[in-house]
Length: 433
Ligand SMILES: Cc1cc2nc3c(=O)[nH]c(=O)nc-3n(C[C@H](O)[C@H](O)[C@H](O)COP(=O)(O)OP(=O)(O)OC[C@H]3O[C@@H](n4cnc5c(N)ncnc54)[C@H](O)[C@@H]3O)c2cc1C
Image (tube, rainbow, N blue to C red; front, side, top):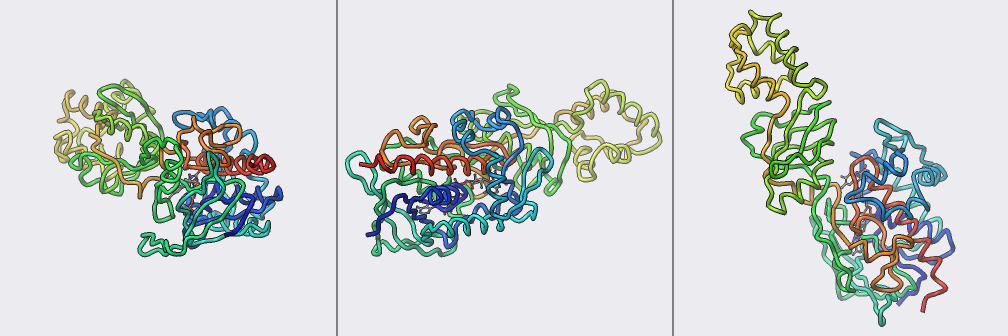
């Protein structure tokens, strides 16, 4: 049996920051990580470039969390984007701001961020045990006094625990930083939900979020691999328009993906789970209202009246959409512009503004960037991130029911909650019974 001030379960973004901060404040820290290395997910974030945070001001920042970011106010007031950027600078990581306020390491290399954090944690004398999975809490009355953990092996991303070698680690405080369920190959097994439930916490059912969407395959035939920019999508649930988003999207083998689709995906998932009818409509010409678009079509048709509709569509659409449009509208590609009727022109205009896709499902956790759901935040103090159910326990990161849009918001939440959980746990060390 080994004894520590603080045991941290999970060496991801939130666990690493928590470990470094707690040790910086003088605590004896043990960090337990069941993968062979800490920070596996962090190392692949932002397509390997790590979108660390965002330059948005606090009110806008909070608006990117769903259902809302109020719970995170205290975490952000203690450790926000400026503090994160200066901590990383001290660790040798310079950052740059890109389009949409997204902040990345200047090197564009996520693994360098992981390396800097792990080196920092090691320098602060944190004990890091990898290939070690926490399987239970040690409980006395209504407080936690440590954890039981065992060595694990991984075979084809399947965890094989060696229960015979169960070891007890006692501690005054425990921080649960096990993340969610998305990209399970990075270590997100959902263990934190199971652990939290064993001590009476409620877990809001986890659902994939920031996840690609599956649509009626007939409606995307021939479009796999097509990327669109400057488009607008609108989300329709049971016939009512619920949301819209402007930006980029792409077509996949199964349906739709890309930033605008990921942004609305949590609403799609929840609507489908409620058996609602979901339709996504694509506006290829969001800068033109119906009147302006009609004038543009009229002009194109009149100026090129001897040319085929194929030539005219090529001026309006990416190549892959040209035969698709002709098929959907039943207008042969070799039809001459001067043979296009007012009715054809109207159906083309309506199609360009509202291409409907019947949503049938969503991709699994293995393709979801984050998990929505998790430990119910009403059971956690937003001031300290301490459990309201069990003393000596704190939460950090995605294991809680918090999730945000893409843009660096999720990582900032993980870093900020890790930092606050560590400060709260260290601050309460003397109160431990
Ligand atoms: C492909 C991808 C790209 C992303 N890109 C971005 C981005 O650019 N910007 C952004 O803001 N967000 C991004 N995210 C989201 C972001 O990575 C997560 O929100 C963030 O990592 C959550 O941090 P965390 O510490 O809560 O969990 P994690 O980083 O998942 O860490 C949890 C750790 O706990 C360990 N663990 C779990 N159970 C146990 C156990 N029983 N015992 C021991 N260890 C355990 C896991 O192995 C893991 O290392 C991305 C996510 C994915 C999947």
